Image 1 (spheres, rainbow, N blue to C red):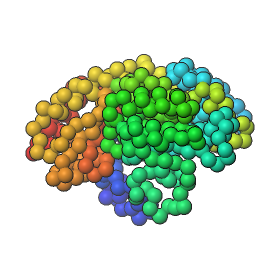
Image 2: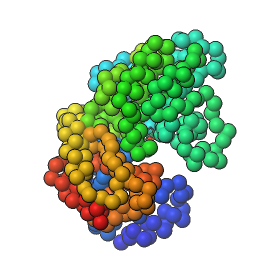
Image 3: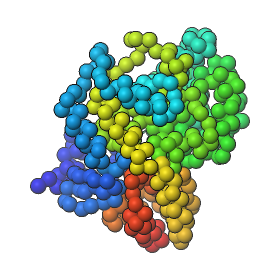
Image 4: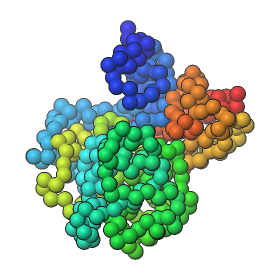
Length: 400
Ligand SMILES: *Cc1c(COP(=O)(O)O)cnc(C)c1O
């Protein structure tokens, strides 16, 4: 029998140590539950960073994956397939944008948005060659490629990986005046997470996104929303930018676009923006493959048909109210939107990791972000009674 100890030793010996996972080795998943190699069950309160909003191994996604993989898996974009056109249309219909470009990982979709924004800036806005600038926010997380870490404000992400890509300016997250000052005639785009996930579920001050969107509009700067983690229902709306009634010029989607079944990401935008790409400008061997497209089509249908954004809004409000009743010597405050809650601990609490380990003991898997925040993000199919079950355990861990 495979044991936890055996798996951890083997992985640590042969796998690079670029993560520090909880010491739980999972072998099965169904809905909100996962099971480790010793047969212990856990409620998943991370949902693979919101990739598994639809729940683990959703039967409809399993079926589509099985059927499509047996029929046609990969054509490359050298040939066309009969799934991509339908995903493209359905995603545009759902989001109200004119065009989409499919990729695999979130990082690749962010890279795609950066390339589109730069090319748009030169070819449409008319900025001088190599002068385009993109404004980003402190505390951002947009992925791990060399260009993307170039504008991270987390020193560890960059340390040892230079020389870095130029062309990015950083403003404090939530600071409209800093944004206004940073915009200049060479500004191509503002790339922003409507709510910062990896930073610890940080919700910007109300009006920040809306005012920045207006400044963008006046100055012909593209507003680019990275909704890879915040989108597709997590915050109680299909997209987090809808909380401020804005319409970004470009939206980056990933994670739950496949319900955790397969790596699928995409960028959606107007024809004026995505139309800048000509054959040969950009691409990916696996991007837009038939399995990815078939799975994503079904994953989107599940989000709508199972009313995941509505569930998230209702259950998130229910849970955060309950959490706020906990008498805890460790908690500073709670923040979030929908079923996406950051439990921010006091400095004196001694870090979030030990609380996550205590939750693991009690059968809940959650992960700390930035040392002092416990992120709550279960699959959005979770039921109220299951949240109550989890709440009791969270209460015990936080009040003891
Ligand atoms: C996860 C994430 C990414 C990167 O996605 P990968 O699939 O890990 O490359 C980018 N932006 C945000 C906001 C994310 O949460």
